[in-house]
Image 1 (cartoon, rainbow, N blue to C red):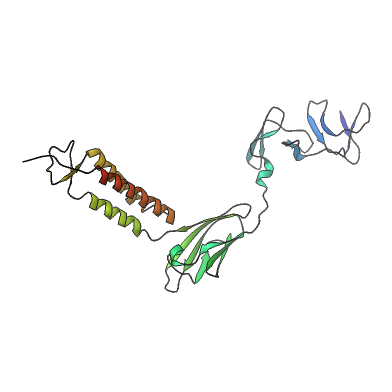
Image 2 (image 1 turned 60 degrees about the vertical axis):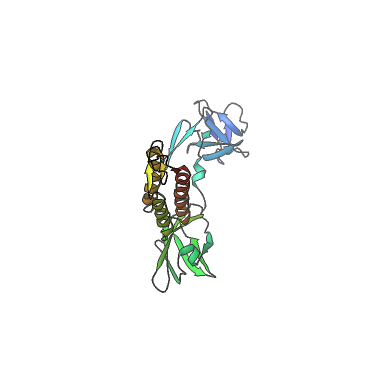
Length: 258
């Protein structure tokens, strides 16, 4: 049996000598004592490994539930994967000034800004949108100009205060232009298996090639309802333009002679 003195230092009943480090009690449970001999509880780091100790000091093992989160140990009792202290991140306010307050970025030049929650504060200064994290969570930053045109910035604040954001795009005309260009590329093009049924004055493509462009056009039309950033718009246009180029390269003169 393990005994402790009034300072919480461990002594073995057999010799009375103070012990430190891991100690296996007669109850078959492990306890950990620091360099001063004091029994430890809670989370301890020993030689690069993390262990959980109960309130009575005994090492916990297997699947352990703390604040609704599951933690698993290996056979030695060391935590595998995420550790309890990984969740205890100190929040630090972070200011992000990287969003420029200009038409190229927002589509407007904002004169006022508001946040949908208290988790993020926003100001406009020196041609930039300054967003400061206040607490963990999400927020929508609304930027408006003197004509009441608006742009929005979606913000996520991590538990350590780090800000992740994107500008919600409102101008999707580039997608419309790409769709119109794709439609023009199909005008007067005949679908044929080998071109022998198509006049030499006409162009033809296979059904497979035609279907591929139709699929790309449909994807672009659907993307108009889902894109949220300028990069999304750029990627959508690039994908459709590539499909149009592939379609154009596949067009061939017919070989039918009257």
